[in-house]
Image (tube, helix red, strand yellow):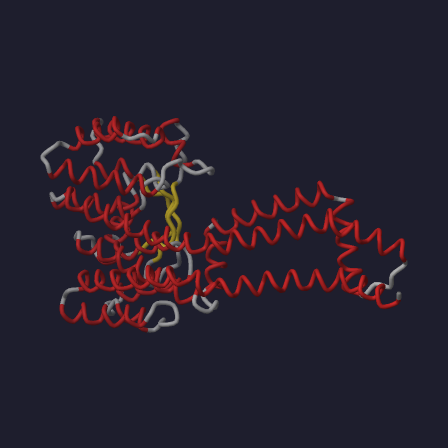
Length: 405
């Protein structure tokens, strides 16, 4: 497998080369041995065989993270019971109800039979198996404790997924309300306002500016209804695609950090994710620099990832890991840097990070329960404002007519 790699060395300009390696982790190791570090890493040549279409599909893999975490936990259980890896994968292949995961497991089994290690086979599907799983599997294979590593990463992924579900669940209610407001507003502009407009025209009622704006908007939507709905669908699809992209999610996240309550919830969520990932990797024996690089990929390209990248740079220079986090308390909560500092002093960084992760996971869980209570009055004000503006704009001419009579 070939990787296009941008390398940076002290006192030399960045250089881009193509490295032939079995996995991304071998690239990192090779570059570090040569005294440099990886700035950017992409696969040089795509494999478009049927066995890897899932890896490159822009429509998603059809495999949920919950399926992957369950697979990791089941593998851990079977390996600890004495089953071989090949037999354990065969059991997963037969029992899974997800046809996409079945195809991936089949190909992984074939790769292992041909001599590949388990972690090398996993790297062929970066969109299915996250970097933390591949790294933990590699650490487990090298240390002879694969079942323990799989159990840890399975629990890590399960807790991360549970945290994400709770946050999404808290957002469902406001999403439904706002969507309903938009749909009702569009229907009223298309079907209700034209009827009132006809009445106003026949009676020659003087119209205020707000009413004229509503009528103009209504006339436009009625005249170009197909284009309006097409534009609305395109906007929704484009927005979803933008938010799911790395750059788009980073922009949305940067703005959300300044929203009261929501910003604090986001900070604690990412602190929990970062702490849990680093703790799992370090406890499995993954080197600090590799652990930070993988955690950066898990966190994705945003303000939180940039702090991790800065921490990685500082560690390369021999500075403590906690310094970068201590200088960015507006991004990561101050508890993160304090616990890291204590962990570095006592030589127990991984256990301290685990405590940080558990604390923020519990705190986020409690806050998401109260989030709907906080959002509800805001939504009520929004609904009242929309209804009030429409009522005043469309009913005031009727009152003017009644007064004239």
